[in-house]
Image (cartoon, rainbow, N blue to C red; front, top):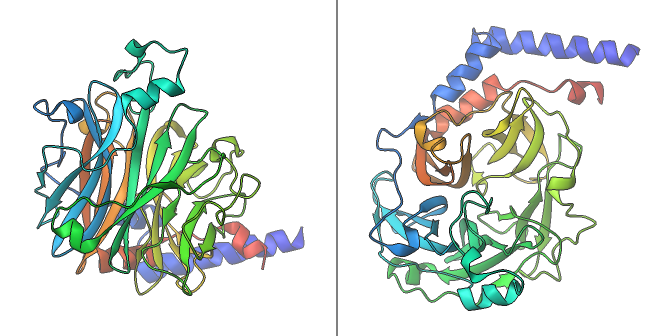
Length: 380
């Protein structure tokens, strides 16, 4: 009991120190952090296109990479057939995008899908926002994340074939082929085995010569995240179901502002202070909406959490975040361009939107305004 009171006292003193140093209350400081994220007036930056059947119903959840002076988006696209394909768009300013009129990657076709569902009528293989909870679709490649490693673009994505079959897969393409719009993708392969997973992401560089695969955000210790180091992107080397637990089956765990931790959002962004990681979680006081949190991981040992914002930094309050599936912000792409940080996300499972911030200002605000966890002091 004595250690508990000592820990609480240390926590209170440190909180007062932060307030005095910043000259503002924690609530004011956190509001400053939120206000640094600027929604574009042009949002949504991409909308469904009725002139192209394969993306006529929804565009959402894009991977983002920066190469050749452009921001490149690989986005999940939904047409009336209900299959998820990847479209491609590019921008020189990160805001105004041009897009190709055809998908650049797809993993499954209707004939193969019907073979998975022998007892399902072909009429069910349609875009259906009532019966198909996964963004209105029944299968295909969903929710890509992208990184550039050694002059190759690696895309991880979710292979969705029903709620009992959700597995992370990947493919890659040379940067030169991307810039030339030659879609010479490597043959895709699964990263996870038979365990149900949706949100594994790669770090944008190798660590100690190995691929770093982020596979679980929270297994009960708020000071640690879970990363596998791989010689090869091969499911024989990735964590099995005993280690990479199904996040849907993990118990609620109160950390900072959230009680239900969902997943990593975008691949980590490297900064001089650490790896900036955005993540999705559910607010204990507002449990029906996806919100965006942020933490900073140690550069040398990214399993170690250095800082965490005490409140969500982005909430689904805009109309395009509530159009058909209310309360959804699903960030899957982030790029740093000089001192600017762009975050791209799906809104309402229908649109693609973006926010922008000054990376130095955001990092400074996070360092100054984060709320320390009581448990960190008690455990010392």
